[in-house]
Image (cartoon, rainbow, N blue to C red; front, side, top):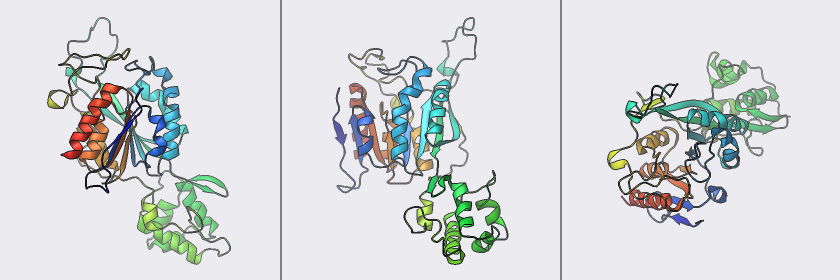
Length: 349
């Protein structure tokens, strides 16, 4: 099995985004990659689609377990995960993700339209509605803090530190210069809790350390004995750049035309589609536009994007196009060859 690593010039060499393609098992290189702002997972679906893909979705949790362990280990508190799969495939992996510290945000549905199944459905035998969708499920890393009283969620930690300072909850309003919003939003423990904006967090931290019990100070320290700053607090929340008019249903037919890569299939790989010269290289190539939507929503220029199961590396291609740093892996030699060509081309355009 090939395990070499292909790299483009680093950002220090020129102005182009850096990218890295590992030819081999991604478990060998997670430790070498920089901490990701975004992980785009498009791995096993439990349909036996490539060597190592389980034959049924019930086996997917075991397949993903070592990867999720590494994602959790190397993620930043503001890292987001976007998990492509079938509905039943995702359902089998979801409990493992939650247990590992990933909080569900929402499901994106790719509606491929009727053309996806046109002429391929026997109404007398299917006995269910035809499937024309895939899902991409959005998770964020659970924000938690270690304290002398145990690990706490951000919501619980904010109130804990204020109370440790010996201050009445109502004084949070004075600290933030509002009538009652600070206590009601930032220190509440119910569903109305709101992540304090950096400016408001800085006011809470400053007030607690000026007026709190000096015997317990300092307060609101994330590492060591230095209270968190507004800039540090801002980096603990993932980027979100809203696009008006874009919902959680993305309607587009399976790729065709110029973007659909065609050519000879994988050689000597059991249970892998072997297309002819005019057939698709990869059976489930994702639109670059979809990857760009994800990248634009939750990353900033220069951020690191992981695509651990690269395939044709549409996520890494989109990352480079949008000025991010791309880190991908692919074990199947032919897919890696095509991916490297795409990455090289887009990085030099």
